[in-house]
Length: 302
Length: 302
Image: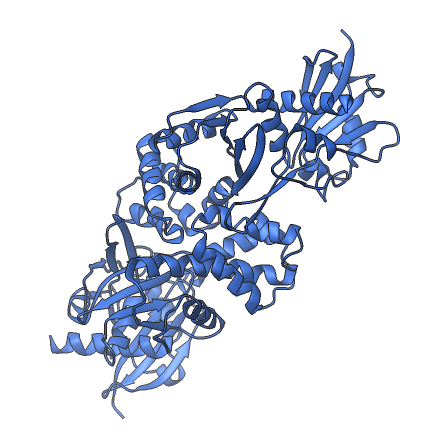
């Protein structure tokens, strides 16, 4: 089968490499520990060469297309943010070439948007490619929700990414767990659904964020929540706060929930608790593959 | 002048020791680096003995009265929380004796309260003594606000502490500054009023806390706020979120703002921005002294 494209989702932590045939099927996949924070002394080009082995050997003549933080100011080369509303066309137009001695490397730009009515700016890198991938088969109006360190809620209307917002939910959980007084009383974390949903409820209905999180401490002091359930309670508080903010802005839109594993399970529970009826789970890696291929096609046709 | 009481505000970080004459005047003061987190291998009794020198030598026969985290479960002995509404009488009733071979040591209890309408529990230790101290000369209705690592907003009505809430504003600033992506772009922090007030405004009018804080990053990425002003902007976001939560619950009550230095200046600016007209600054150390003396008197009379 003719090989036509090597593409990667290259972020701060993760690196996923894909080899496409000329019909757009992925015929090989590989991951590697060369996220931006793990590059060490390697240049981006050296790091990329280091993973071109096995199924990926002898492909130096193919085009390479990279998405994610590799296109940030701290990446290989900056691919400037494209403004929302955005679609496959404007994002493909923003693709830039990366300097390379031996490879033909292109980098997908990120997106920026102003959260409507707030003056707040938002940025994403990598998620735009996943969203485009999903939109190739489903461009209905609604939310695309990508939970994570910095969760993204993108609003799709008329086949375009109209705007999006960012919630620092994952990072907030990590810093409070590891570095604040709230982590001190936690022990032997268990995935307790009752504690999680109690957190979701309080996070949704008590909007004084800096105050409501202190209840992690007081619920422990008064033995209302045992130590092993406190982290589930905290994650509920945070995800509840995230969900209510978007619900208030945009109502119960259909939601496509992108990703997999335990985190997406939690978001499913929280969205259900919050009354979202139309929630569809979508595999994050398949979304990235479809987006990279769509951008490559769009660029080749243009 | 006859000496009548040795008293201390003994917290996690700070330790302030006071010597009272029999009219309630403080005739000597001392600080020491024996906050709970700095005790090392010393017992509480050993630590207290270590500071009984100079003006405080030869006082072992006097009563000792201690307030603050020294009365917590991790303290000398636990003085169980007293329920709100609370006043000088019920707090004095909650004073407990600490085990000591050579000293007559009593410890002031903390307070607990349920934030009205939320089911959220709150606790304080040490602040109740400052509040009681202020109420000796001014028990008008309104807020007593004690900014800090865990800010307290106590609601005074009919001469009693009716309820209070906690905001983890100071700790949130520290963990985000030191351990999150938001701190990465900060440099050479300056106390910039414009950036601070921009933060206050956005913290008040954008209630999606986990989302609005991400603007620290995007304002930097788009060069809207220079690196040295980002920490002022973040502190504005946090204090704005704290102020709006209390304003929504209780309106523009009169505020007594307890403490000193740069932090209280920031709260004054934020309260003014939020439309609070009746704001009085009160010295935190003087409040602690007055509260300790009032508790001693109440207990001696009972």
